[in-house]
Image (cartoon, rainbow, N blue to C red; front, side, top):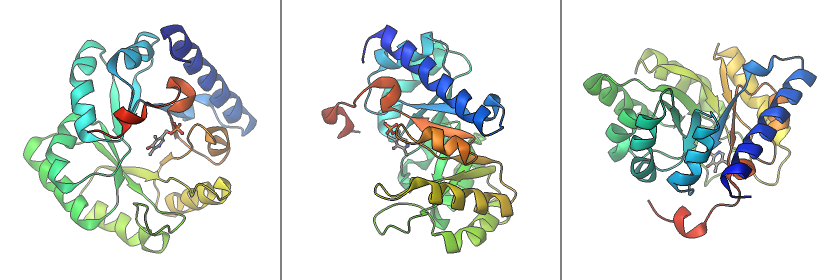
Amino acid sequence: MGSEVDIAENLAAVKARIAAAAQAAGRPAAAVSLVAVSKAHPAPRIGAALRAGHRIFGENRVQEAEAKWPDLKQAFAGTRLHLVGPLQRNKVRRAVSLFDVVETVDRPNLARSLAIEMEKSGCRPDCLIQVNTGEEPRKAGVLPAAADAFIASCRDEYGLPLKGLMCIPPINEEASLHFALLGEIAGRNGLEELSMGMSADYQKAVRFGATLVRVGTAIFGERQPFIAASG
Ligand SMILES: *Cc1c(COP(=O)(O)O)cnc(C)c1O
């Protein structure tokens, strides 16, 4: 795993598995978008995916994304960049100008900052709310019991362009339960986008209604720890 050819082949294989999982679930393959999570991978490797025609990517750190993406976005028209990691309020201004989707809205003061910076800049990235479906103390995300109220305030109080929900299930639990819970919360709130499923479980997520799957390792190979620790 690692060369330009490998990355193109990995992308094609992941897309084929998504299409097969969608078909098995009676869903159109086009209902599921692949977010290629390129965190910790350098621009040349990302370039391989872009040259293979892929256009939707995810990064988890604002600073790292700023170092890699402005040139790539310029060079490859139609690229859409998703923020999939936690967002600190002091980086909201930079985040709204670089990202096309913020998947990790998870608290009122962040929602308020996003609304203010969107108003000032005129940049309005789509927003997803991260739900901590496993109620893990150290994990970001609004708790399931608080989700309906937070969704309502993101829409009505902050006026965010809210499109859906995102979750990262606990590592040692059956992911299906978390995918089903996320779908239930989205359904009762009329939200269409469900971002769930990573390299280990994206096919399962597709069966549970994912519209966005976030896949890194299965496309780009193992991440380099020293890069992952910076930015
Ligand atoms: C890193 C990351 C992914 C991709 O994980 P893989 O297991 O490498 O596919 C997906 N979602 C989020 C939020 C991530 O941080």
